[in-house]
Image 1 (cartoon, rainbow, N blue to C red):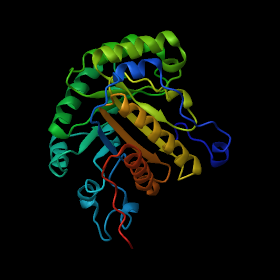
Image 2 (tube, helix red, strand yellow):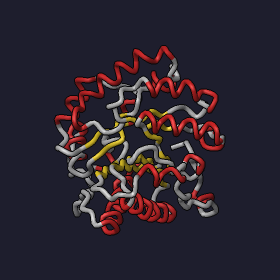
Image 3 (spheres, rainbow, N blue to C red):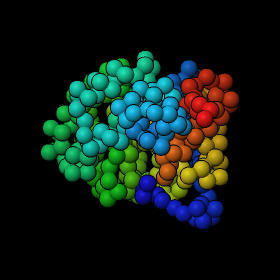
Image 4 (cartoon, rainbow, N blue to C red):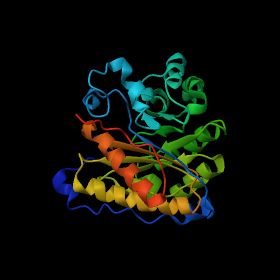
Length: 295
């Protein structure tokens, strides 16, 4: 995890509290409490270090997914950034239970190589077709734009998003500072996303607090939480997220996708479990928690 990376020493000096919600967020939520659908998980299932942690001892690589879906109800799929095939997608979906959600990352051919220009369309068509193989287990896909994709490309972004089918769930992750520090660019971008029924990923990472925009464009949220190997600040930030999500739920949140990352992925299931346990207690929920069998 290089993006927004900070050292343990720096973490103790940073102000990592969640900023207040943008004024549009509560308006978008609508104020009427609903029964939210909440999905939590990690970014990948192929982690050997989870064998003996949440995967049974002796679990083979090819069995990782089968055990992952018994521990979490969602996954942020970074693997699709590099390759995605419909036949493989259909196999993955067949192995997940009802209610599970996959959130595939748009191909790098689209975001980083073609930079969502006109030449990206054929790659987009391929990605959308492959992702359709998830069927009812498809969660929102996320388009992560490179750090140097700045606000001067706001019209290109709008053109691209507007051509994504209305019924295809999608969030955009923007990283250049323009999207958050230039009010004109921010307002144009977030208004466009709201009009298209799409969202903006909220990234919580120590070294880039500007991307923690807290501005929803629909009653759905997609959060990428980056931890620092269970540093005390990880737990403090997760506690704040529980309180913020509780507020969102009370004001009409419909869906939440909360995906955790750690520098050492051994700690990611622990991160998810802490968040789920606290959220269940705070909101009276019964979300699935990962199973840590006694060794």
